[in-house]
Image (cartoon, rainbow, N blue to C red; front, side, top):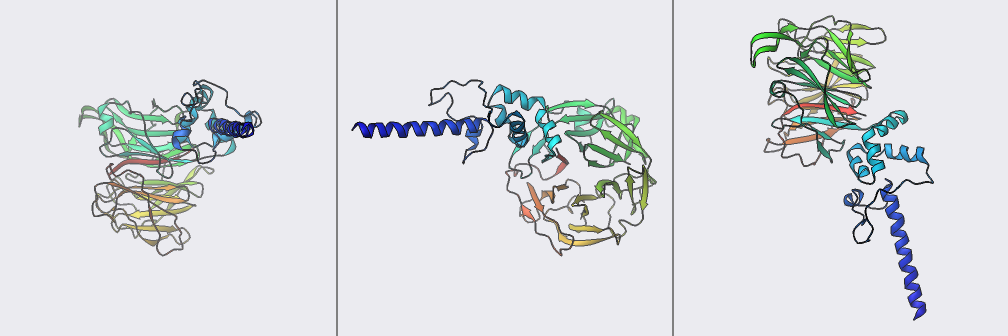
Length: 420
């Protein structure tokens, strides 16, 4: 009897020791076993059935060393960092300090975030790459004019920049991912809308567009409105200095144009000139040479309607892709031949609103398209598709993401991808 009792006590001690080690691993941010989301959020029994009181203990692992521990924590997905913050005050301070992002930059670890503002929504949302986690950003604290007027968005480093106009003039609001706050930043040298933009590393580039000018009879009364002046100026945003820097002027003034980075150069594609004529040429800015080169007939065969959106373009693996609204077809640009190859239909109805309200972006080595599905009998909810493009293919395979966004409008006002 005593032998059995001793055996039972030994087994019980072994189970307790195993549970203790699992708990310590869990709370130190190391993924173990099949731990559930609830457990990762802190529901691991502390202060519950174990009888322990929740406390700010040191859950670091001495055998790893602080440098290795921080390197591991820096790789923790940003969308899941709230779980780290719930472990201890030390981890909470670490997450809030932005130190993990500094370490990410040092070790070259990055992950994409998709920022989106859908029609009818009062706040921006940010998704992880798989669209399995979503978080609403704080409400952008601007005036009614800015919230109701057209806006443009771009990313630079860990900053989401939303440009538009307020009653008093042009405004740039900056969302800082690390601090989770909106800050009103410096305006562009030449405030504008319907411009081309693209990001490269931590810098962002803009070119062209329509200038913001004073009007005595604007939609919101006397104040600043987007006028008739079409720009050929260009600027670069530096997230370190938080300032806009002038670049050389383009050869051609253009509005409703689009931008991308390819071959380590800033491309500006399509748009319309000062007389409203469709431009088939493109331009490319080489930062090393600090100059622009004109690319004739880049969009020569592209059908364009009067009210069509700016070109829907994205670059994946240094290849340029375009979603053509009139045909709902995906095309790839053959650089050496200066022509486009058809890769088949896209499963989102870009043709309905002539390209407006559709998000077409690069997401790592995939293409991302968001809008009303062409495969559904009801087109009043958002659908998200990705594919791994191949310029040699005749037709691409699109994958629909089931991510619980059916309650959102399929009309996307703004969308951009941050890699940080």
